[in-house]
Image (cartoon, rainbow, N blue to C red; front, side, top):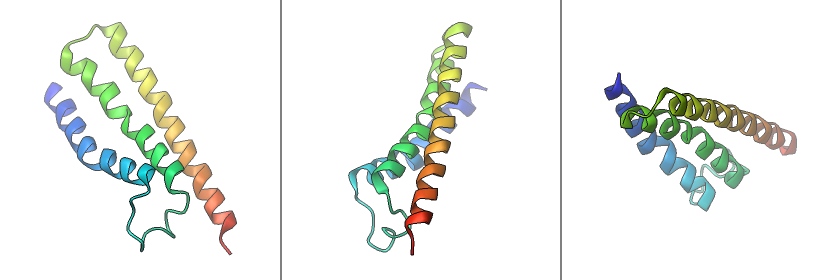
Length: 99
């Protein structure tokens, strides 16, 4: 099972992390700017979703105790819910602001 955690961490690090950092930095292609209207907030939401991967994988890969693993999993769940709520809120705001 440990191999899957490492693979998941690598995949999310190669996909979500660069996308989230690009959005936070405002480095988005001009053709995508209208679709990603509030770029920085969406980038922070994407980074919150990315943070779930290291919080779940690193304790398992290092062989941490069950209590530490459970605490990190709970923190990851809170971050996942926070990221999803932020994405929904920003999507609604962008939809309401559109003409």
